[in-house]
Length: 338
Image 1 (cartoon, helix red, strand yellow):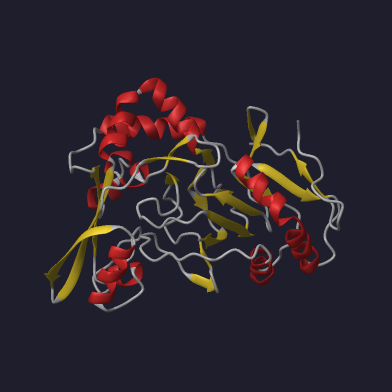
Image 2: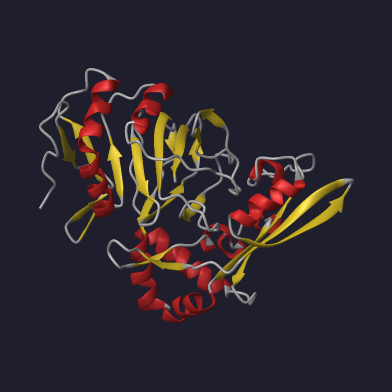
């Protein structure tokens, strides 16, 4: 049964259907909510969120992703008010490798990676022991061409992989996964895909960088001197790659293997990747296993076209997201929820 209007308060909001949506077991993915009439102000929208926060959280747990469309969020300050209305604790990108820029408070650019670069499906910061529980994405500027943010139900990967390659799942469950990365000093860092250790851990102090690395799931830190500067080699503890969501007891593909393993990128970037991904015992994963998961992701994902003012709310445990290449301009801003 489709969702009914979730409130009688102003604005009156109902689910709509858009191109690109999928339906799994009668459940829309993503759920798209739109007011029947444009809100008269951002405060009206924020009041609606406050009045219906519990219901929205229930819908998010059910649908994994909610797209809010038509709420007249025309600038970053209105988006900030929108996310503040949820009264959730904002998270931190400390330990995150992708390049970003701070825009306003907890709001950052979603990524500064070059527009021609396709970012594979991933759960945000799944290579840390402190991943966020949810993410907001807001469209400030629609992409001229492509530039979608595809989404994917994590449990779908497990379902398909269980049919095609159950031994890979078994190995991951038994051995877990390690992430090993090489972070350059900011004076030497020219990589468009990864940040320096100073930017990754928000400090120029090596001792504090180590401390923050250990707080986010690091087992070992090594410092290597090069050209008078220090480079940071970081090895994670064994981290669960498949996790059971306590709300529905379903296993989820919760890791960064396809995002970070060189086998998933056959381009030039893979030759200079600062990442290594292994099993928890440091044994190597088969490239064919990684590529099989990537193929499943590409087949199972869904996407829609961004419109200015759209907000996508993603449950980071239940759903993965990606980014297609695009022709500029395009500007998507993001906020992490702890």
